[in-house]
Image (cartoon, rainbow, N blue to C red):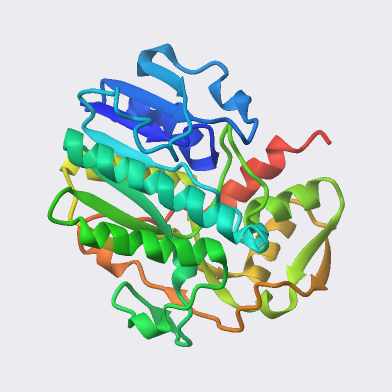
Length: 307
């Protein structure tokens, strides 16, 4: 079986690339990225046994994948992803991310490849203790252009559900290290600031709010499960390791870096709601995700330990 990874140099894509040899069904992997993020280091010292081939491509161009043949699976990671910085860049982000998905949908329909579509738990906005995939549309209240685009993408795939096989995974906030690691999401950003003795800036409304988090290890476990089990249900699933408050994240950081400085700030993303995201739907399919993100915190601080 052959796999195509778009956005292979990013935080998630680079981790999958480094570990793809662990999925025995995958014999060849095509890697695609435009490297506008300048994360060339994601391509350094890749394992030869993984049978990887890299192509420099902008997949917002509709026919940019047409020359790839005999692809069985596509993991679509290519997109602009920074929710906070999406304010002021709405038009650019909408066009880029939606055009990229149009290219991938067209390719998957033509090649009959099965698609992993990555959405986000940030689409939720219901004021309740627990939200799941059956949350009513009126309670899906994205707090950023990035999250709003994810809902648009989900609807695009629903319209195509008779023409391709796919899973939409609403990922929690990513934690963990990879070659393409980014430091704009909560856990990684807090670890970086702690390591260099800078203030950890926390949104005033967020300190005791619950949010879903996902370790890269559980993200990869999800891809592996679906490929090995041929699990593609044309449906939406929440994918997370656990729900935590910012305070709980900070306590875990303090176990490994005691003297951290926390400063409360305001932000444009002022979601006043606190909620747990349910992962029971994917658990019922036999996939249990429970990696302890404290290990991700420890690994990230160790990575930055000499600065």
